[in-house]
Image (tube, rainbow, N blue to C red; front, side, top):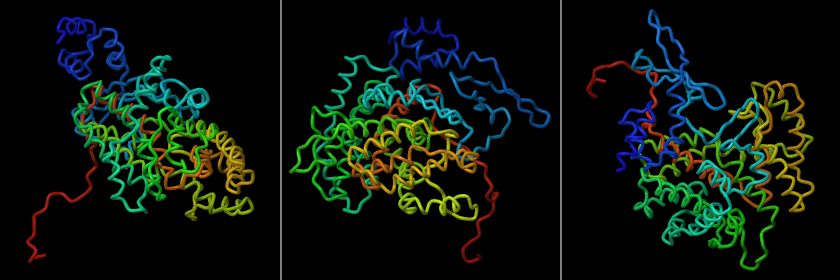
Length: 476
């Protein structure tokens, strides 16, 4: 161990105790002065803050530090709240709680802003590729040409899955949901790569992250082919990431025509738009699972399971079903009336968002992509698109929707696009998971490197019985 370097860094980084410094160095294998100082900027930032929040409880006053992010709201550090006051906070859904410090993704829902490592999502969707965006999310910066080529090659070399994994699919019925297969098979990867899953080894983490990004399209395509009763198609070296995925899904033995570049670009955009979205339910699940030291494949499988929920990853499927239920433009007024009726259970799906209180920045890109795909496939008169366009017009002009900020979100258009490309609704969430894997991997890596993180252990407000005596069954 480089004790001289550690001593030097200790003298340069006064906010750290020697114990914490050693813990960080061992955990991250970081001995470089420059890299260490770069990694510790956030630690210095939050340690040196002088702002405090005062909490008055009875006759006692308690102070808690306030930390400022680069942008966005400041946070009150309540990690010592119980120690100081004997009380917890109560925050169902954790909607007012920052569970971690992160440098990956920033969302401003009020302004309709989404940034990956500081880059606006619209610019990345227009100018970048999914693998370049993946490199950005994983490593923090856009790659140069050599780094990008090496990354692309490493992903391509890992695209195949172990032959034994093919047997996993034979155990699923023909009517098995593709998400069930995806969740099971991704979790099963840990049985094949257990020798290289030391989460405290930075090179192992990078290897696992790249392996997941490389194999998830292959597994997703296998789930799709199994669900439609067709043989698997192996990945082809020389094809791009999105093109390879589409080829594995839709290749026919009698048709060797290349995939339309318009459809490939649409798939790339869909992947980019879904790559990460801050501390949502599935990402928080990945982080919580990883806080216990679980292997990365199990953590990502946990994220997939969470994403499967209709309130999270199934929103685009729900939006498509709603458009199908409405059927045609003439029926829209009746459904708008139902949506405004508080006593009617009907809800307009694809409008509004838990975070965005403005126009979802991803929806703008997705709307354009939707039109491009429909035009490429020669779909001129699509009843679903007609209904979608009229609903969008109403939502952006009707006082009821404007007042409640129920703007169209990404799910509103992505369902139509994926349906036009040939994917059944059961595959929509699988594609979401495919894209989000890189975000989960980036968040997983960031958490492991954060020396302040501990195993997740939310507390509760207990409202059950107090202690009571057991009564024998004969006397009950």
